[in-house]
Length: 227
Image 1: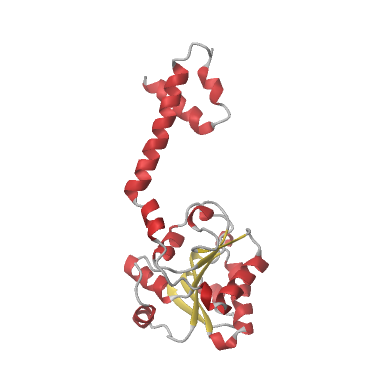
Image 2: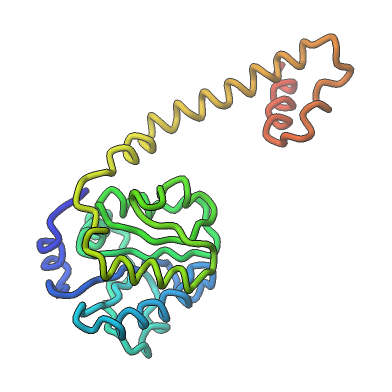
């Protein structure tokens, strides 16, 4: 849920005049989370734009790896409360999500619903959430230079800030009812095709027709087991 930035920062004890970049990860020691790429990127923009008062907001267990960095870090620790995380998203100006591998990260969806711009590596299901240039930016996997350039552009260009609520499409697409209906429609189509193949008299072994599509093959076998 979107709420005023000043209100959120006061609730979390964060400075009102800083440019806050969020990194959220259960453990910064997990290489796939990409903290090793966040540190040099934030350090570069911090050095280049001292007037912006850039600080990194860390959620999760990354403090040991961030204790020796030159730029300011605001450690918030591990937050499991939805209300607290909502305040974090609303308090920050930008989120970096440079995961080297991921599935369908809820953190990006949550950030979008709070209108927090996100720059992320285009891995896994991330491109399904971020429409590049619309509600965030995508960069190639493990491309630290591109991550820096996008971060630098966002820090310096006020026009890139998301001022309007453009998250309704995301909420509508990923509501449980919408997702459930989509799954039901998809699997119903699989079963319909399985039925058609099972009843076909033109194919000696219908299941061999499915070998190029593992999901369809599984659906066909499950169907034949139940009927």
